[in-house]
Length: 450
Image (tube, rainbow, N blue to C red):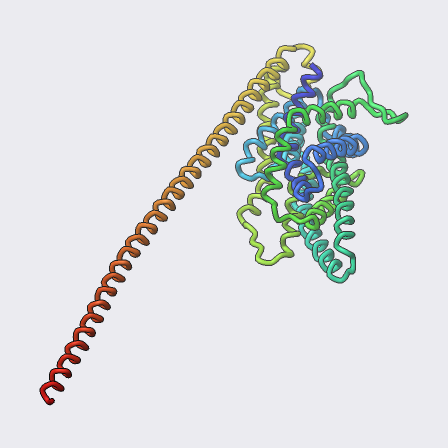
């Protein structure tokens, strides 16, 4: 049962985070052609693992005291509600983040369990989510301007500059992965904090607590479930950025590293959507170019999603907790799933089975959508091939028509040439006749005169 909880929590929390957010965040690095896709995946996996193990507790430990998540069933509810919230809001904006959804789920659980809405926690995180992209945009803009001015006035040879760029990008990629683990890893550790095992991790002679063992297993589960989708999205996202230069990739990742590091300072950790930080850094880098147009509607949807995603997760979590409480206890009051789970054991399996059924349904839906998408692409390619064949046939017919027209013109030209030749011959014969006539007339006159 423990492994079952670990797998489901990891899947619900990690699906959107890895296949959407992290895949997009790494596409600038992949677009530089300095990394192969699987190597980049390995760098991010180990970086996130190390970042979460060594710095994840900076967020998870205070959050455990603040929210007091009781049992693995509650953690599963929070992860599942966050998954559904992102699934719903993903149609509104691709910038919807599971990190923001977990935030809304935590607020709902605290309100449901203790009857308290944590306004301080809400304002602190919400304002951080608003200002962090703005800071990333400004920082990326300034770093890009500084880099361009530096390159203009420097005397570094192109080959040496390219070597420096390669080293800087690789180092920043490693740091980026570690900072992601340090910033986002604490959320996964918090969700898994209710699961206890008899296994411990150790780094050399340094013992690591139970949470880090479960965190490592969860990351492995996420990679196993999502690695193909990550690689596919990584190639797709980077293909849309064919104009990304190594210099731009370095500026974007460096700006993101600075912002994520600033919000991962010990005792002041605020989990961020890495996706949105990278997007903001990309915008700041793009603003230094000319003729750049920003879609205002997308920006408004971006800021709207900061409220819609946690609000959706809040509502879904509150509803699920209410329904689950009715199965555990039949009286009002704060929910305490840890105590009641020993009395009624059937509720957890029923809930887990419902989750599995819904998960299978979602997977079938995604598979069906993928098949429809592939079918649409095949139909589009078939239609394009038909258009190409028709255009080719039309071109052949046009060529034949031109050849026939050329033959017709050649025939007409030949007839005209024959006609002109005949006219010339007629004129020549007439000239000969008239010369002969005049000559004969002159001879007759001479004979008469003599």
